[in-house]
Length: 335
Image 1: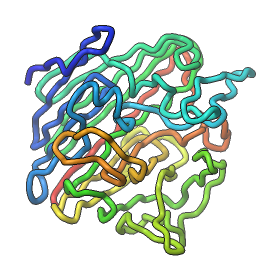
Image 2: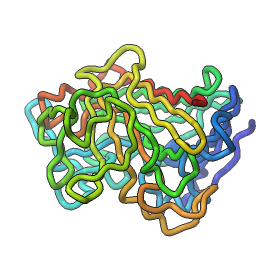
Image 3: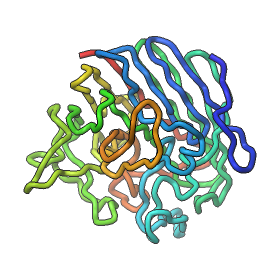
Image 4: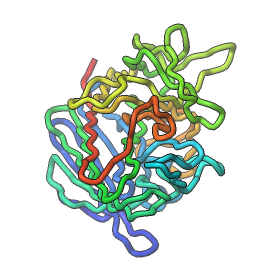
């Protein structure tokens, strides 16, 4: 299918809209944030859009709840690198950088470099010093439909100076088209998770999920109460301690109303589960009447949040001559 123009930014930059269709999957991708705007998969009972999307480019610029290719939180909006302290641009309070800063990759216009009926490649160049990060970074996001019911996202990046790169796909899924995802069934094969402080920064601890509301080792409803209050989720789950060369299972979600199953497979060590409790989009979205609290859920494969400030989490530093790579697959089927 031919690519079209989704809109223009205030400075006249055109934002592309590419549509892919193969193997029972149809996906609309926009250049703003390299985001998935629409996703329809021919599985389950009834035709329902599987992700939250917005109507116009202005809606994305003004009201998008971080849809697109992003990063996670860095505490203190700073991190050590080769004996010096790198100071970043904060955008969550005065001390935290969230999703790569106020103009992170999810709020930038990516270039549609290549497009066919079953694939699309978007690219972005981030100058040295952008949002405080050292080094010129060249990033690529490749979407493809390799087989029936599967969407693959391959992310890569290179740099000319040591810097931090930790990208994540950040779509909001709702497999039933329901008002909330609280009755979706979720499984995450993680023995531990990383607890957070009041600013949602990991404390550095690896805590067992056993006997806690964070135990998703067996499939269960997302809705969970503790001491009479509903538990909210915006936490990193430890699937492994290192990246893997090939994708492994990170999560399994079932929409009970349509009988749709989504498996998330990725090369990354962690997956951030966000239940969408803070969603409140003040415009009419795409393909549904409204986007309110818990209208969609995010499953974001990545290095653990605040990794550069937590040596026990490993390293997310990218150096010249190296290539950052991530492969994440969304695998759909009927159950």
